[in-house]
Structure formats: structure tokens, C-alpha cells
Amino acid sequence: MANYIIPIFIILVLIYSLFKKINAYDCFVTGARSAVDLCINTFPYLVAIFAVVELLSISGISAFLTDISAPIFKFLGIPVELIEFLILRPFTGSGSIAMLSNLFSTYGADSYVAKCACVIMSCSETTFYVVALYFSTTKIKKLRYVIPVCLLSAFIGAIIACAMCRIF
Image (cartoon, rainbow, N blue to C red; front, top):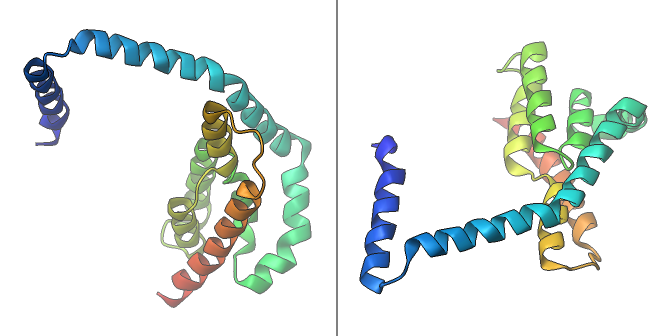
């Protein structure tokens, strides 16, 4: 059934456009053109995010932040093994997935560390990527409290996720 969902949807859209007397091809081309413009407009922001992520890992800043913040995370109930994951998660989704895979192979998929990482991964967002993408398309320059609130809520969510994994 899943193999037929997209073709059925496309057929329904074409039938709807016939009834409404809308040129579906022109609408598709217009949408594709605006998607290309969106990619061109957001590309510099995405490059900046990818550069920051790479610089964090190459420079050793993420390892330094891990060493400094380990006592705080341990006190809050977050495994020390997840600190670098939590630092990387707001920047990149694919890097987080790679790190999650590494956590699976190192600690096992059923370990407490892996369970916490899975819940954090599914309940948090790549904050800087999303902010760069959405705010660049809406031309909003003053972010005010958006990033601090997003990061704080992700951190509180990580604390709660680790507590829930410990309980259940």
C-alpha cells in the first residue's frame, strides 16, 4: 500500500487541477523555480553552519567543552558520554545521526547511553540550522531570544529524557 501513496496523491492532484481548470504543469514549474530561488538564498547560511560544525570538531573546542562541563552534566543525570552529542545536536542533524550510530556501536543499542541519545535525538531540533534556514527566508534579522530559548528548552528536554530513560 505504501508504494501507491505518492502516485495516488499525484493523480488526485491532477484530477483536482482538471476540475478547477488549473494548469498543473505551470504551477509545478513555478513551484520548482521558487524552490531554486530558496536554495540560492539559503545556501550561504547553510555553508556557515557546516563550517562552524567542522571548526568545532577540528579545533578541539567540542572536546574542551566536554571536559569542562562533565561535572555539571553528571550532576544533572546526563551521561558524560552524551556531552559532545548534546553540543553537536543543535548544529547538525546528519552529524548527530553519525554520532548516534557511533554511540550504538560503542555502548550497544540497548544501553542507557543509547536510549538517552535516541530520546534526545527524536525530541530535539537542529536549532541553528532551522533558525538559519527559516529566518533567512523570512528576512528576519533580529532573533532576540529565539536561540537562547531553543537551546535552553533542548537542554531541559535532555535532562528530562535521561531521567525518563532511567525510570523506564
